[in-house]
Image (cartoon, helix red, strand yellow):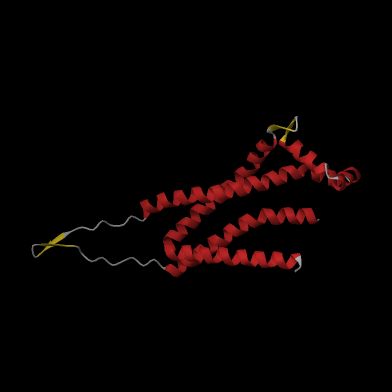
Length: 194
């Protein structure tokens, strides 16, 4: 089976899984809660994209001792890349490729940091969503009223959740999460292939 076909099947499978899971979670929550979750999720994803580069640059400057050499992480990664004979020959022959190889460690670390931030922000945003949701969408406590000398709980109409709209919002959130995860990966793949 060709690699392109495997990649296509994998991407379509991921698309289906993320869309289905998003739909099911949105269907369970309803429109209002799914919209609140999407709003909080988008804020945290924007935050992750803003802070990923400064964190990556600070990680690149961390010094580590590997094989007796105390170098920055950027220098270790560049040295590791240049240990490959083919890459070393290309590095020596092409100034454009040499510049790219010098930036490649930052690109790799930025992708790893961004992925870790997205996953941690997804978790933190879910906790924030639970807190905000419990405050905003309080359930009314059942109050007893006396009727003919007996305690009676008045019947209250249940609020409609608009589950299908919630499913739609959940699908959007699932697709956004998939694209946020795949964009850095596709960027590095297209850069390397060029």
